[in-house]
Length: 105
Image 1: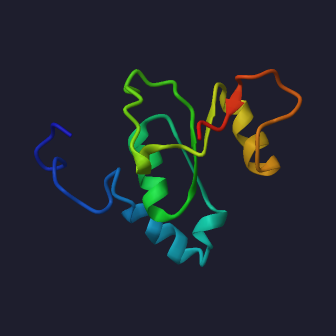
Image 2 (image 1 turned 60 degrees about the horizontal axis):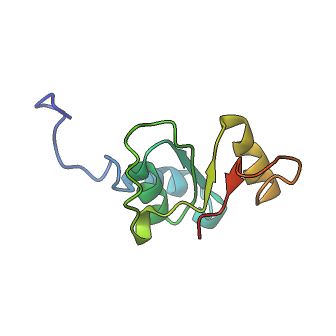
């Protein structure tokens, strides 16, 4: 951030996983059954660091795809309406033409 009072280092700011870890603990959830869906690689990294599964919806110009190990999404989707299909189906929707959703690994 550029606003001095918010431009601080905090476990609650992505790519740190603090807020996700807190939500998982408060909900008594299994992080392996949680999903982080985001439009930038910081979202993916935060989800990965919290132990969540991850989906990237690349609508942001931030994506340089210099993806490292913690910045590799499990799935990349081309439209938001595919997110529930991937999560509920635990994979690539079969009734869509590629590359609407794919596993980059």
